[in-house]
Amino acid sequence: MITIYVPRDSAARSVGADEVAAAITHEAARRQLPLRLVRNGSWGLFWLEPLVEVATPAGRIAYGPVTVADVPGLFDAGFDRGAPHPLRQGLTSEIGYLKNQERLTFARVGLTDPLSLDDYRANEGLAGLERALAMTPAAIVDALTTSGLRGRGGAAFPTGIKWRTVLNTESPQKYIVCNADEGDSGTFSDRMIMEDDPYTLIEGMTIAGIAVGATQGYIYLRFEYPDAWQTLNEAIARAYAAGVLGASVLGSGKRFDLEVRLGAGAYICGEETSLLESLEGKRGQIRFKPPLPAVQGLFGKPTVINNVISLATVPVIFARGAEYYRDFGMGRSRGTLPLQLTGNLARGGLVEKAFGLKLSELLYDFGGGSASGQPLRTVQVGGPLGAYLPASLFDTLVDYEAFAAVGGMLGHGGVVAFDDRVNMAKMARYAFEFCTLESCGKCTPCRIGSTRGVEVMDRLLAASNKTRELSLLNDLCDTMTHGSLCALGGLTPLPVQSAVKHFPEDFGLAAPAALAQSA
View (cartoon, rainbow, N blue to C red):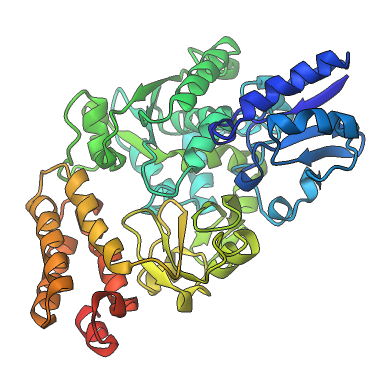
């Protein structure tokens, strides 16, 4: 029996994985070769998708990118035995892009059938939940705190503090909410977890529920992820059937229920209080804080709100121990971060690395430099509200504090690269325009400031005497930074000011004057 793996991940499907799978099935039948076709998750090597793997005694051999037209020739060459072919990439585990990662959160992604609980269990799945069930709630929270896990959704707030606050807040009902409204440009790690290893998210949320005394969980999923919607619902149904969810989690007598709710496509609902408003059936708008969601969250009850990657990382922490996870990384940035390489790069994809590597290693060792062959000029890390970092800062370490020190932020780990043809004035203007489109409208600095920002930017670019407009731009950015209710308005100045600071020539500014004004 030949075992062949073809990804079911939406990124692979978008470039023909379903058609390749059908062609492989047809060709094997035509040649009367017994076939076991496994639709696994994507390894995240997107420039090689569809990446087809064949199980051999030596291990899984990868071929890619495979098209339907390639399939007969692959069979002719004997690829079902791992034979040489121009598309042969060698052992999957030895591909440098993968071999040089530290995959903890993504340990099973690409390896297993996402919906097979047997596959999940065979690869350390549920080991963390079983250990957590043998611990007291306080001990679970202590272990999570020891691990050093911080929020992977943007703010990098210590996860253990959130959990402890909910644990220590008395209430007859508590909730676990997963923020799966992944809306930042250049990000897809949440989607990959939900499509390619959904049980790790289910397990992480269940551990959170056991830890803080919550019996109900919700995954707030962005409307634009239909494949994740289907996969999550099927995985949850199977988890209930297997006793992983429900009235007695793994026979422990402890209850945890879980369901998926769809958002309506608003970027602002990635902010936790807007998300809660939407989840309650209201318009997605920012709530005033305090009270914090950990004290008064969903339906006014204590609520843990974490990002997909944060919750999906919890199982490996408990399966292998808090100290094991803590020993990856540097400084206050512990563990690993799934980084998403996009934009003008030769090798876009998912890279999970321990904190502490250089940004240049991501861009060149993994990303392969620009896809265009032109020099890379800048990179935006942290989504549409992240700073633009010039090539002179590409040696910055991937670490929350190191990025903050150069005026940047890691956010959700999205990395978007641009070559030397990019117009940074247009990119800065777009930051204001984006905020105008996505503002919930509740606070004046964001609602009005973003509109005025587009106008000021247009005047700055057109003005012969730019001093007045540059001064007005800085005043506006200061107002938005310190006066906005949430990070949408508060962080919009970050890409604007970084563009002016590092690329003054694109604004028609003399470098010394621009740096002095925007410092």
